[in-house]
Length: 184
Length: 212
Image (cartoon, rainbow over all chains, first blue to last red; front, top):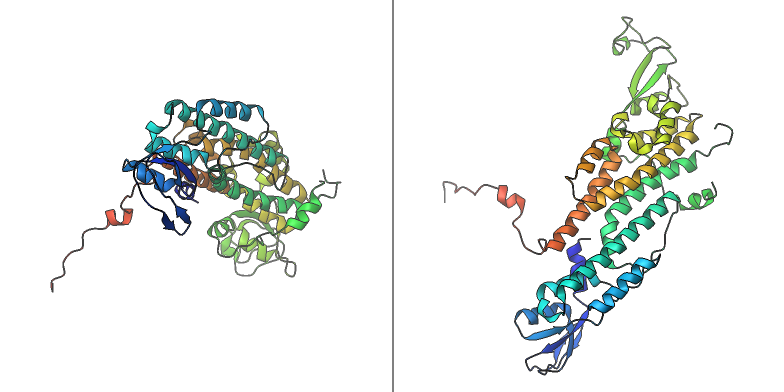
């Protein structure tokens, strides 16, 4: 899967906006949206929020977790814990990068938020690599990694699937030729 | 090994001989040292060293794997197969000492797959060979993973590592670099822009034919 496809899927999640126009209910396949009143918050899918923002028809209200205090807390927790912590959103990186690109003025302290998100991503990727390495060295057949996000899984997939395929063949070789115990 | 039984139940092995896989076909061409057990008439010209008309018993020759496999079949044992030296004890000890330092491409570009195929000859050292192949792969994977997932090609380290990779490892490397490249492009926002396809750029403008 392409990162842009993961990105596309993440645009389905809802965010809150503050519209500055008046509009009735909109009927879409995924559900009804609206009605929109100026100054009243409404929930719309991300793709729509970005589109409205680009036409200067709304302000996007960033999710609660997208502020320095919360992100720093999460970063510290991520650093301390051996396992992956649960992320506020299954697609935090996609959401953050899209919002930071198109609605930077709506996010307080955007630069710091960007750095924090990047740090969290990097800590998690390092953790992911470490656990894969352990899994390989211990000759495990499977590993349980909870709380991984889509993009994280996607970024490791090409390596992991191809490497493990070959490893499996080599392992079958070992199983098919069991040592009798006397020859070494 | 304690996990033998687990693997036994998991085995969905690609039967070892994937007929149309190009890499597999190429791997089958690797030469293996063989000794003739019987006389083969009128094929003496294959052995450049001798002038005789026939291949005599005890002639040593390097044959590709696909030929050796057929000639060594149980019903007609025309040749006996020896282990190529890179799979013998001396090399196994080198690989066990430090697998990451070895230039596998030099030992045979298809080190792992040929090694796996050699097991078919039922050599007494089979368990050792299989074990060494797996350990080598596992030890080398760590470095391969770090390099292929960290930086895009061009870094000095990967330039020194790449020529030392076995063909299989090379594929893994290329595959994961491709994933990383896509991710980097996504991060920079290049991927969402439409670009014209390479074939269109390369294609020359169509010329008008004379009748229109």
